[in-house]
Image (cartoon, rainbow, N blue to C red; front, side):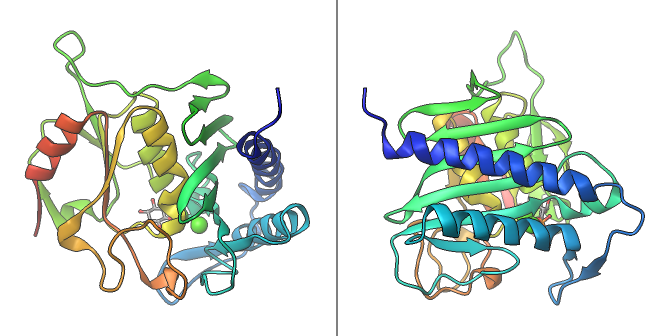
Length: 270
Ligand code: IPD
Ligand code: CA
Ligand code: CA
């Protein structure tokens, strides 16, 4: 059987995510970790920068014609090129800096505007999520499938971000969990741990890889129409010229279409 481009992309992404995970672990819980606030008030550490550099270097060597769109070092997509690696070198920086375990590296190869391959690695948890368009999603090599709460298993979880109660009124019968990594909250739906995940202000690098994992696990991934940022109709197709650090996309992940529709009816902006 000939090897498809996507399977070699996934293999590259897996090796890279593991390497970057190791690098990040070297900084984790270090007393002397350098951290500062960015102009948007989000935290960045020396580990975020080192991870971003490592990804850019590796992608540049293996895919010289590809573009890197990454949170810390290359947040604009304005160079020619149809294949783009959308990278969050460290999602969950606040957790990371506080010594909590939910943080990881997120890589998505976007070709023709849409994510085709996704790899997310959460090193402390040793959880590796991989999705290839049309081929499904796995967690540590095991097939992922969403799970809809049922009468036999009625308890459902809604993963969301800390801004949610301030910005939205949610009238949903689920237990709320704030995990501190938007990507981790979204893939919690893919693995069947959460019925829903709602993120109010994710950027493209927070959602690109996780969105494909959710979809390939049989879930639904939607951008909320009533809150879309000006100039950006939806996260995909990716658009050249956008200042991606300035654009966020409220998104919902759900274990089924019915759950997504129900949730959207019960999520109101405040
Ligand atoms: C943040 C985390 C956080 C979410 C924010 C993101 P970062 O990403 O995912 O959980 O609420 O919207 O910006 O800064 O840790 O990469
Ligand atoms: Ca992030
Ligand atoms: Ca980040």
